[in-house]
Length: 124
Image 1: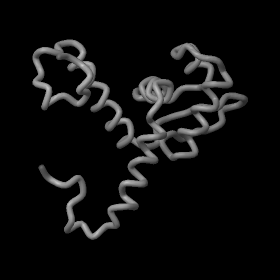
Image 2 (image 1 turned 60 degrees about the vertical axis):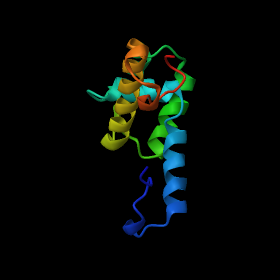
Image 3 (image 1 turned 120 degrees about the horizontal axis):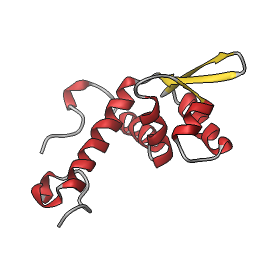
Image 4 (image 1 turned 30 degrees about the horizontal axis):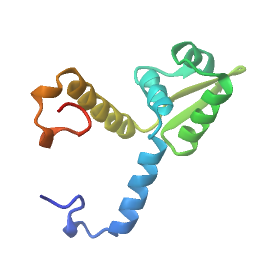
Protein backbone atom coordinates (compact mmCIF):
# COMPACT_ATOMS: atom_id res chain seq x y z
CA UNK A 1 0.00 0.00 0.00
CA UNK A 2 1.25 3.48 -0.86
CA UNK A 3 1.87 6.11 1.82
CA UNK A 4 -0.77 8.84 2.14
CA UNK A 5 1.84 11.55 1.59
CA UNK A 6 4.56 11.14 -1.04
CA UNK A 7 7.87 11.17 0.88
CA UNK A 8 9.42 13.11 -2.02
CA UNK A 9 6.93 15.95 -1.57
CA UNK A 10 9.18 17.62 1.00
CA UNK A 11 6.38 18.61 3.36
CA UNK A 12 6.22 18.12 7.09
CA UNK A 13 3.97 15.07 7.49
CA UNK A 14 2.86 15.95 11.01
CA UNK A 15 1.57 19.36 9.90
CA UNK A 16 -0.21 17.87 6.88
CA UNK A 17 -2.00 15.38 9.12
CA UNK A 18 -2.90 18.13 11.62
CA UNK A 19 -4.46 20.29 8.91
CA UNK A 20 -6.28 17.34 7.34
CA UNK A 21 -7.69 16.34 10.74
CA UNK A 22 -8.80 19.93 11.31
CA UNK A 23 -10.68 19.95 7.99
CA UNK A 24 -12.24 16.53 8.67
CA UNK A 25 -13.29 17.80 12.11
CA UNK A 26 -14.98 20.83 10.56
CA UNK A 27 -16.85 18.61 8.10
CA UNK A 28 -17.60 15.86 10.64
CA UNK A 29 -21.19 16.72 11.49
CA UNK A 30 -24.28 15.80 9.48
CA UNK A 31 -25.58 19.37 9.83
CA UNK A 32 -22.51 20.87 8.16
CA UNK A 33 -22.71 18.30 5.36
CA UNK A 34 -26.37 19.26 4.85
CA UNK A 35 -25.39 22.93 4.68
CA UNK A 36 -22.72 22.24 2.06
CA UNK A 37 -25.17 20.15 0.08
CA UNK A 38 -27.75 22.94 0.19
CA UNK A 39 -25.17 25.46 -1.06
CA UNK A 40 -23.62 23.31 -3.82
CA UNK A 41 -25.68 24.75 -6.65
CA UNK A 42 -26.19 28.36 -5.56
CA UNK A 43 -25.76 30.83 -2.79
CA UNK A 44 -28.57 31.16 -0.27
CA UNK A 45 -29.70 33.37 2.57
CA UNK A 46 -30.06 32.07 6.09
CA UNK A 47 -33.86 32.00 5.69
CA UNK A 48 -33.54 29.98 2.46
CA UNK A 49 -31.22 27.54 4.23
CA UNK A 50 -33.69 27.22 7.11
CA UNK A 51 -36.38 26.27 4.57
CA UNK A 52 -34.07 23.51 3.23
CA UNK A 53 -32.66 22.24 6.53
CA UNK A 54 -34.70 21.17 9.54
CA UNK A 55 -33.02 23.01 12.41
CA UNK A 56 -33.29 26.16 14.49
CA UNK A 57 -31.91 29.51 13.36
CA UNK A 58 -29.37 29.70 16.24
CA UNK A 59 -28.07 26.19 15.49
CA UNK A 60 -27.80 26.92 11.76
CA UNK A 61 -26.02 30.20 12.42
CA UNK A 62 -23.50 28.49 14.70
CA UNK A 63 -22.62 25.94 12.00
CA UNK A 64 -22.53 28.58 9.25
CA UNK A 65 -20.17 30.71 11.34
CA UNK A 66 -17.79 27.79 11.90
CA UNK A 67 -17.76 26.91 8.18
CA UNK A 68 -17.18 30.59 7.35
CA UNK A 69 -14.31 30.97 9.86
CA UNK A 70 -12.70 27.82 8.44
CA UNK A 71 -12.81 29.26 4.91
CA UNK A 72 -15.21 26.63 3.58
CA UNK A 73 -17.99 29.21 3.07
CA UNK A 74 -18.01 32.88 2.11
CA UNK A 75 -20.72 35.38 2.99
CA UNK A 76 -22.00 38.78 1.99
CA UNK A 77 -24.68 41.16 3.21
CA UNK A 78 -27.66 42.03 1.05
CA UNK A 79 -29.80 44.50 2.97
CA UNK A 80 -30.62 42.76 6.23
CA UNK A 81 -29.95 39.28 4.80
CA UNK A 82 -26.68 37.38 5.04
CA UNK A 83 -26.04 35.33 1.90
CA UNK A 84 -23.72 32.30 2.05
CA UNK A 85 -21.92 30.52 -0.75
CA UNK A 86 -19.29 27.83 -1.10
CA UNK A 87 -15.77 29.23 -0.89
CA UNK A 88 -13.88 25.93 -1.01
CA UNK A 89 -14.94 23.85 -3.99
CA UNK A 90 -12.33 21.26 -2.98
CA UNK A 91 -14.06 20.72 0.39
CA UNK A 92 -17.39 20.26 -1.40
CA UNK A 93 -15.81 17.80 -3.85
CA UNK A 94 -14.38 15.83 -0.93
CA UNK A 95 -17.79 15.69 0.79
CA UNK A 96 -19.60 14.80 -2.43
CA UNK A 97 -17.15 11.99 -3.18
CA UNK A 98 -17.43 10.45 0.29
CA UNK A 99 -21.23 10.81 0.53
CA UNK A 100 -21.76 9.42 -2.98
CA UNK A 101 -19.59 6.39 -2.22
CA UNK A 102 -21.44 5.72 1.04
CA UNK A 103 -24.80 6.04 -0.74
CA UNK A 104 -23.66 3.48 -3.32
CA UNK A 105 -22.53 1.14 -0.55
CA UNK A 106 -25.86 1.53 1.25
CA UNK A 107 -27.84 0.92 -1.93
CA UNK A 108 -26.06 -2.32 -2.87
CA UNK A 109 -24.01 -3.47 0.12
CA UNK A 110 -23.44 -7.02 -1.11
CA UNK A 111 -22.21 -5.84 -4.52
CA UNK A 112 -19.06 -4.25 -3.09
CA UNK A 113 -16.35 -6.41 -1.51
CA UNK A 114 -15.47 -5.43 2.06
CA UNK A 115 -11.93 -4.43 1.04
CA UNK A 116 -13.36 -1.92 -1.47
CA UNK A 117 -15.81 -0.25 0.92
CA UNK A 118 -15.21 3.20 2.30
CA UNK A 119 -17.47 2.38 5.23
CA UNK A 120 -16.74 -1.15 6.51
CA UNK A 121 -19.86 -1.06 8.71
CA UNK A 122 -22.12 -1.21 5.65
CA UNK A 123 -22.95 -4.56 4.14
CA UNK A 124 -21.79 -7.91 5.22
